[in-house]
Length: 400
Image 1 (cartoon, one colour):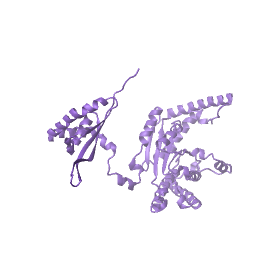
Image 2 (tube, rainbow, N blue to C red; image 1 turned 60 degrees about the horizontal axis):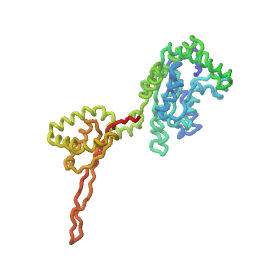
Image 3 (cartoon, helix red, strand yellow; image 1 turned 90 degrees about the vertical axis):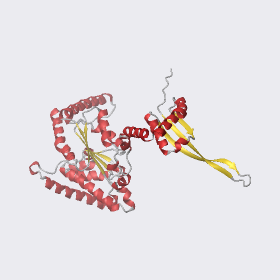
């Protein structure tokens, strides 16, 4: 966690903190741009800002979040960044690790090529200044995208996607989980010392004291949670009840983080595609629409409708029935009834209503009809063959 540069008695107003954020962000950005060049300021396209109460299962669920979002790079854990040799040296020299240092080291890490497509940030932002810096980063990414959109470098500056995800448990559950983890770590370390096998795990003081565990939870509520909540109106926000069983938690994560084209595609790409309906839009009312069509067939074209049903009954079902085991049948017919487009639509809908899935291909072939013996010219007639493929759930055979 960042150590504030401000003394408690000198706590600044929100307006001053925003101004501090502008100074910090501009300083960090200008330094990085001078070092790398503007065209190399390529931040992750997708950023998941992950926060969670102590004991909420961030470590347990981070890998699953990455899997759902197809992020291959490991998460960036901000607390681990602050334990790097560079940060330790800074603190050893008597310097405070404040918001500027946190933003600087984090931005440098995110510019690593392996994070180009996406990354999970564990433990950022935690302060008002950090919140403002992440908002300014988003604005910069959008600006760079516009700047390079007419150049060959445009592929490196994609539409940024930011997600805020909060794993939440209440105070009592958080304390119980922290203390349980402490007991498990003590038992693990004792076993490692006894056998010499394994790695000693870090023992946190907060995992062994109810008061410290409670204070850690309240720090999360007052600092990290409020920081993430302040971004709710700007970025995609996901609140996950982490007190549920793990499979339920991950089911909710999957539901929250599933692909949504309107959120993830470039707006111009989405505008081109939006004229096409999504599969869900079609399937939601498929049964209702099917009933409507069948009733209309019978009311408006009763003779044709009965002819189609009779043809299915007398000419097609006899071929389908022997394929009851496989659940797949192919039927070829030249019946002229199907030359009527309305009859084809009826056939497919009748099969659907009866629990079958049918599709029809029309094959046109030239068949020799007669030969002019004087000229040798061959006259052909057009042969139309309807190839009907029918799928249905086959029969299960128990053996033994």
